[in-house]
Figure 1 (tube, rainbow, N blue to C red):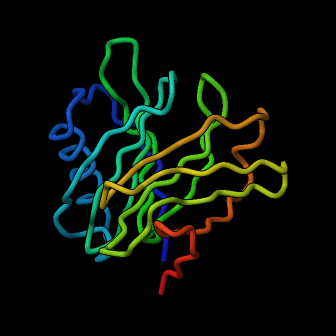
Figure 2: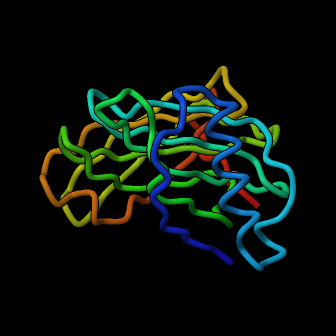
Length: 167
């Protein structure tokens, strides 16, 4: 079950500890057992040359994310939190610098070297290398202004370019 929490919490310092505290505070305000637990493995990744960053974190064994927007002060505002995502997920994100396809997740020990992304609606494909990282965030700028609205189909490949199934 996925949850999307929209929130604006301004003036979050530009560091993982401050972001973790802001997300924890927001989740504590929710009356839902899925939103409780300790947040682990917080990682902030700026999306291209934009004012948006994606923060990935583990909560109750799932890889979840939050979108942060950098304010003119250099600090962040917490825009959205998405809970209950898959082990590896795709999100289209619109930024002040165009649209991006973002793939993030945790391999949970699976032998995945690369991920192929195909966005059929716009006929765009790209591949991302995830060989050396157990948890990762990768992105690519998309060719059309509204392309962030469309779903990306993910195919996982091992070092022999063979398909890996996620079970």
